[in-house]
Length: 310
Image 1 (cartoon, rainbow, N blue to C red):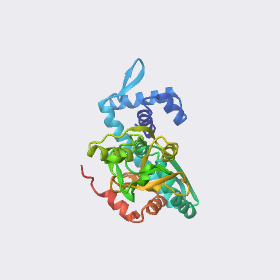
Image 2: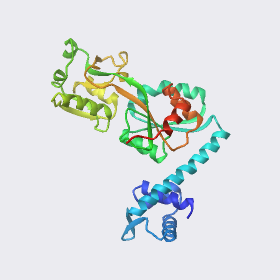
Image 3: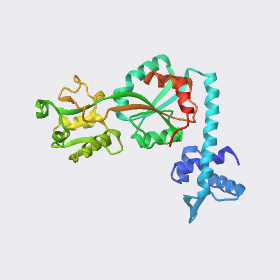
Image 4: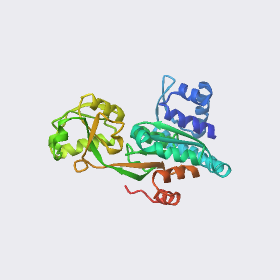
């Protein structure tokens, strides 16, 4: 058994049992990967993958356990390398942030500017996705830090650190009749078509729950993953929208108005998400603290060490 074999089976599971995709990603040959897998299975005396017509079609129950352990070994090797690199180069290296469009567009630019001024040699990369994709990137090690309003699942491996709170507003076209109302109610809003986020996003789920608690079912006419797209649709008369107040800029959004709706909907809470068992470079901790000053390196490590309640 060797590290190369463990990397192969981990990549095969990650890439949907597609050995061709693994060979391309790892710059090797399919026959070489297949040979190494068979050697590993022979050494273990057990099959890791289910085969059908000489193709991998599944993972055996024992294989699932072996894969979990293999991924832990690979993660620890990466941690050792990262720790060594941290001692040698404290101010340079890569940092991958997985985030939603809203965070990348409205929350992170000022933080990234301050970070790059402090660490000009760090290669900062943004990866966009919905909460589910952000979790996947963190779990696989393809991202170091997640910035989102919510992870798709509350997984034990992921540590969620509350960062900033934003209130909800109702976005309407300038001159809309809702601007003449003294106080918004959910019953009143339910009379208008709504443009909203796709189901994977927290904002949509919170909004729908608020209506459901009142026995209301609003008409959702269009879904998108991008707050700018949602605002554009509102401006063109497709409906109204419920968004975080951080997405509205009265100067840039001159054709729109925002009506406070904090009394109707839960606030939007931006969180920092990291993998509990992956090593973070010193500058990564600094990025976290720039996003949320209370989360110093010591506080993050203390929170990461606490057992997670079920």
